[in-house]
Image 1 (cartoon, rainbow, N blue to C red):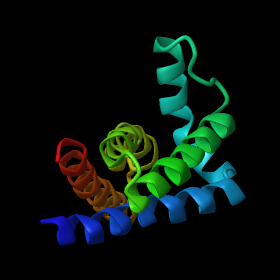
Image 2: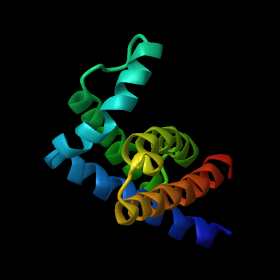
Image 3: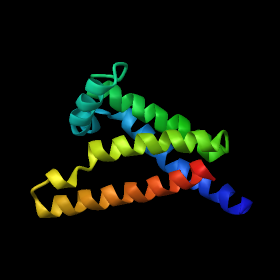
Length: 129
C-alpha cells in the first residue's frame, strides 16, 4: 500500500500544481466562468473574496501549494482535504453543464464535471487514508 501512495499522491498533486500555475498566468477566462459562484459564496461567507479574478488567483495558489504538499507527502491528508473543498467550488464554477445549450459544449462540460468528480473521489480517499 505504501508504494501505491508514493505513486498516487504525486500523480494527484501534479494535476493541481500544473492547473494552478496555468491559471495564475491567465486568470481572466476562469474568473468569468467563476463569477456566479464567487458572488454566491461571497454572499454567504463574510471573508470570501468578491472579485472573481482575486478568487480565481487565490484558488490557483491553493492548488499550487496544496498540490505540491500532496505530491511531496507533506501533510497529505490536510492537503487532500483542502483540494477536495476547492475542487467542489471549482467544478461548480467552471463546469455548469446543465446551463449550456449547445449540445457539443454541454457534452464537453459534462465530461469535465465528471472528471473533476472522479478527482474529488481520489482526493477524498487520500484525505481519509
